[in-house]
Image (cartoon, rainbow, N blue to C red; front, side, top):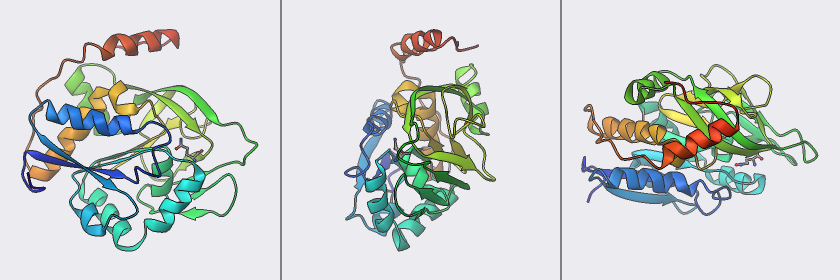
Amino acid sequence: MSASDPQTLTIGWLYPTLMSTYGDRGNVICLQRRAQWRGFDVRVVRLDLDASADDFALIDLFVGGGAQDRQQEIVMRDLRGAKADTLSDRIEAGVPGSFTCGSPQLLGHYYEPALGQRIAGLGIFDFVTKHPGPDAARCIGNVVYELTAQPLATEIATDTGTTPLAIGFENHGGRTYLGDVQPLGQVLYGNGNNGKDGTEGAFYRRAIATYAHGPLLPKNPAIADWLLRAALEQKTGKPVTLIPLDDALVQPARSALLQRLGLQETA
Ligand code: GLN
């Protein structure tokens, strides 16, 4: 299988050795399996410290997970120059990505960690993140939000026939404040970006930023499929229809959690 083969999907996993603290590896597995079950060959490229800009240039779909402040600083010292430029260019060109918690903090303008110096980010997303300090309460717990970002929300609503609710589990100290960028959604339960303005995550081009671990994609297969379709359409330049999968196991789990939180998935 070659990276240019339209039946091959290349997933680039950002810094898995340093940024796998919160179980976001499940997003990579979910995307890989859902593509394989539809007959695609999948390559997962680990974009660790030894990756080159050429590796970034071959990626059809980026995935980044959460990390602690210390690891984020190491990553940011590494993610500079040609690698950073290639990642920015790919996102700008419409290559999709799913970035959770620590990784989007690095893709905004800056992250102020609990201790130490402000870390400059890539500025892909127009937001900033500030950690109020080691004594501040962390935002921990279930998070539910209605997807509002366009065109993602409308496309998912059309595909699924339901109001698109996203379910996850947040665990962050940093608070994110959006600039001129769409939030990914509106918080129905939990803190989201900063616990104050009701926004959760961000959406730019086809890149998703979110505080929802869980991991996000197995709990929200409609988002996983949206990312897969976006990646394949970006790669081939043609409309792609994905064969539906049997998600009968996930729906009762979603409903049970929503019910416990006093929410429901509306038709
Ligand atoms: N270190 C960051 C914070 O506490 C990110 C945490 C995470 O990725 N879950 O805000």
